[in-house]
Length: 274
Image (cartoon, rainbow, N blue to C red):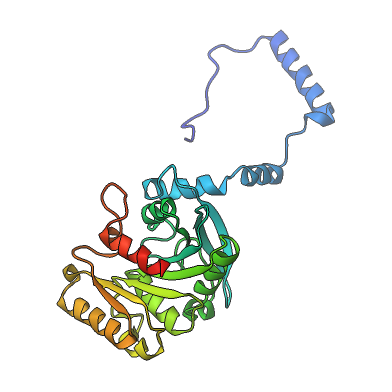
């Protein structure tokens, strides 16, 4: 808070007091060790004091459970850019999830599901696409469907030791998952939860012939008849399994109100495990 005005002394200084103050000022100016630290040094110390994990927890608040083990990372984009990622490790796992978020999710939105999945033996890499969260890249990186997916899959294998990787996305992330899988993402399977039928001018049905067989498409009837029917067609044309999500959209299909993995969430994990 900024001060609203200078504080004024109630009584004038005596002559003796004034002389004493002048003497002290002269001593301070002659002492080289009394110099104030530079502004640059203060900035460096301030930056060094920032804890990356605490910064993420402060950003995500209750979206990341306080007892969840997390590890922030910065990934280099396949084409270019700096990508914000958040790892949820799980001891002894052989299966990892690469999680692509909804529009407002960044690395926070997947927090509850990723934490719950870690408790069941599934580790995760949540990665924010270009221009979401703290991820930045050029236009070339933004249009590359593998820009964030490829390094996240690599991190799942090298940082988390996964033998099998499932690429999973909800809503926007679901559509990005399909687009990346059709572009040749090096994942063992793909899972689209509530993905719109088209994203930024790319229709998912047109990508069906390029999708690896054996994926999973999840859609709730509450998203509307057109979205539901389009998801069914995508599953059929790509050789994927279709799962009725019941009611809800995206993240909310995967965990219950108490943060435990839901029926749909368990089906997603089972498919990821293979």
